[in-house]
Length: 398
Image (cartoon, rainbow, N blue to C red; front, side):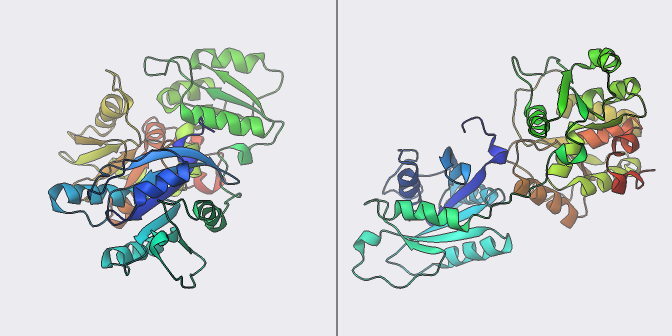
């Protein structure tokens, strides 16, 4: 459970006014003193994340947020952080003081839940002060974080409103038969984590193993030898984008070829948009600005793909003098008008909901967006081949 990546967990956000009891309730649900509890308003600043197991849902991520009614300059920044959490929330819990009517802030939150199609629960906290109780709607519940009242019932209500999306898009196993051989090309360079392979490779490997595929994991330098040593021709080669061109040259034409980035774009539901976005690359002009965005934060090295390699490859391909800006982690600009194009990472660390929000933000502002792997394949002239496994997209590339 602890090894389940954040992007694969159901995210449950706790929202409400300051001092409504959000932190107390999340402590009661987790049975831990996770969040700081105080009578002072605004104690919670940045969102607090806690992973746990909630059966039968499985691994979940609980998120404690700052009060939606915070004040002042710092308060506005906290509110913005809270609003960012909404774009990764699967189930929202609005904690409200049972002794008060719903405020305008809380009613606006409910409207946002509905607009973003977020399933939500209203938890009427401090119910230990009540003498009588009214009939509640199916998504409402009385609780008392102080007395521990209805905590188990709240967990059950979360389970009840959860929509088990068991038909979720597969990463790759729906593209191959169970007896097909698949080769994964995983470069081990200075940016590779010591002692492990990166998350996209782990997830693709597990999906293939669950599908009973024979899966061979090699470095790019061993690809030719591996193909020649197999008694049966591989059905598919999946490669890291950074060695796309090399792997393409070493992979026979009658073997399908694609990349982890392309598979993840499909998995997150944004492949079509990313394919359309790449066409902007040929229409860039001098002094245009490109945003390169990553979904996680990491220590950057001298040959970092996002801040070093991609800008160089784009400059060389376009032969234009371009400007580059960078964002990483949970931050993504709301106003994108200064950019001519956005190039995003494969988004393996981001929830589907957050990835779709970022892509839709670009679409709504008429800013083309693509991802690392698609861009790398395009500038090397091999995007069409890498999409052969998707016949509906293959013929859209010139």
